[in-house]
Image (cartoon, rainbow, N blue to C red; front, side):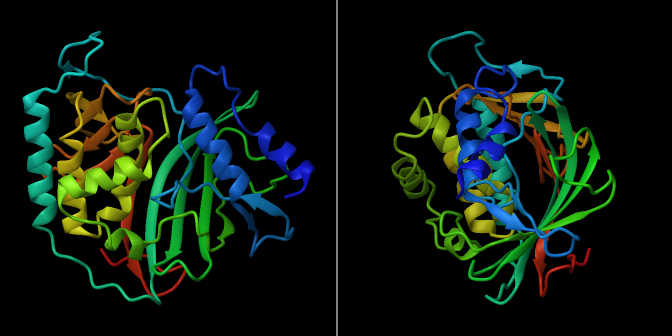
Length: 304
């Protein structure tokens, strides 16, 4: 990458001292921005642009929204030693049981995983951008995908002329650093083995190993919705990490109400949100999961 490109991307990042985005999430965002440049395949200017994908979920940037949660937290607040509320563990295990009972979706290598989200990005000195994003990523990770981003409010990226409310398409190039659907499918579904692997794969990342593991689990939840056994294992693995608490009244980033789970080991305000009746995963207070499915080609959306 050319030095001027790095400088341009760096200017889009919040400063490390920004109280909205903790330093480790700032570093993660910076790393991903530097690694993932895309080319506009539909717009008039074929300039390189950043595509924001998480390491595992392959869908979006780490989000720096203000908390959208009205929280009644159950647990011991302010304690230096993480404590886990049994109600929270029971809730995670109930969520896992429901997830495991769902029907798996047959998936071919030539298909695409479709994920639609709503989230935000804090742009230095320019305010907060609210956007919706649809991603099409190749199941086997060997073909280019597409990100279709619609800015709902706030600033656009420098050099982008697409008006607010109008979708802008960007290619998602195959990236060996991004876990594919097939690689997720191959992960162990025994919670103990899965957590052991996550700890090993994230060694040295984040301020604590538990925090790094939870970051990784959270990044996998959107895609794992399509893999019932893995989905269940992720929730059961999370239940083994100390410090889980129930958030009785939570909202995802799109404003949908639900019941939430937070973890003391997370150094930000991220809360996983679930529908109170079905216990289906809605996303988090930082990123709402609006749709997920498998489609035959880019541009298709899953049948409801």
